[in-house]
Length: 247
Figure 1 (cartoon, rainbow, N blue to C red):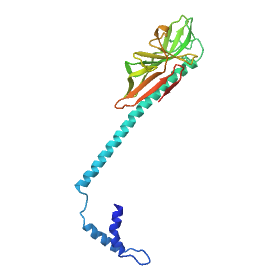
Figure 2 (cartoon, one colour):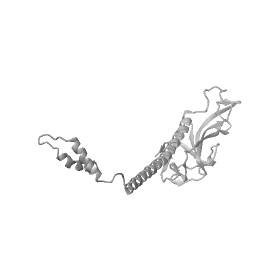
Figure 3 (cartoon, rainbow, N blue to C red):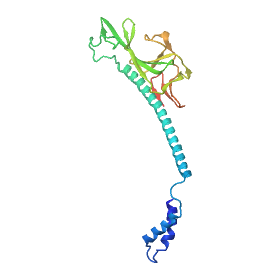
Figure 4 (cartoon, rainbow, N blue to C red):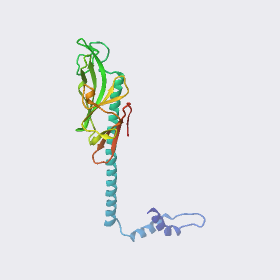
């Protein structure tokens, strides 16, 4: 457009060129330009306006759709990152022997629903570990808690109720999204990180975590998260040896 305007001015400018120096007679150029403009219709045509509006609408639609797709995918990635962090949090709690108490005094824990005491009412207690619970029937949340064992073998968990974490809006556990060694697993799966141990155990119920509710952990545990109106799926993986990863 600018180039065309320059070309239109060239006839006007050529009549004012000095042989040695390129000079312009401003008055003659303005008069010439006015004569050119007078020969044209002023303003935009209806077709031109419609073309501009259509292009603007198409561009806005593409930008909005691209942003919404990015935002939904980012939400799934964030949910997977939070889940991975919580699994590692429970694992670190178990490895560190966290019993929910501030010191080793026998009186630092008098509420078994909130912590695991060293000794309470003439009973000794030990930490079993920390666990994370997934339920394929409850796809919007998961929970985690610690496990405390009394000297007679009785197991309780703390805090009670367990800490509940909700996935971000629009993100859920995928239907058939829990697999062990590539095999679909339905129902409840509890991932137990044991105290002073790096390996991981799986149980279908508990506490107590006993052999009768143990799930065979012969392959990786994968937890798949999906979002609404997007085909993207993000996976968090827990290996029997304790490694936790995700994409």
